Image (cartoon, rainbow, N blue to C red):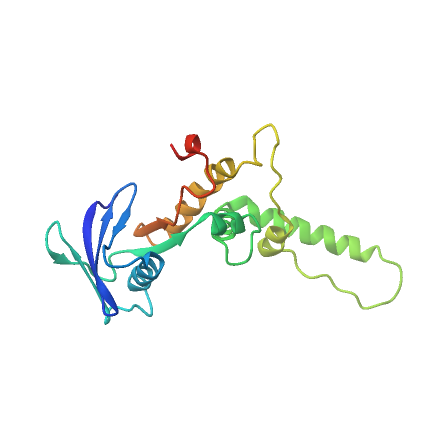
Length: 198
């Protein structure tokens, strides 16, 4: 956990103070451009196309400038997490599943066996058409996956789905950022009851 008080200077708006902790808050008494500020912060800490020429960030704890390579920022919200359930090609969940499966030595054997079985099935077709089968691979396997929630758990509740998916998504973000992920969750209390917020 990186705990600091960051001063963010963006050309277009007055300086902003960002307290980083388990629960982060932005303090800017002159305006309410939180999402713009966070988007600029995210862009500052990107490996490519950083806006480091128009944004400066200073750690007020030690009064040192924070390099744009120090972190890689990810912005999350409930909508982003809900979209992870679709397992799109660019989703963090898909990347995590793909990475974990590629590191399993037995997976390649399973894929080869499936491809042999598909060829055998094709060979059983009657006729002389020159048919071929596309090779089965991990990407095709992931396309066949979908979330099937056990209703003994209350997956109709947002909090339950968040508790299941957010740690996995954050873990993948941290892996992709080589342990330098800085995750900002926008409006985490939205849609949750008072009891669930605690």
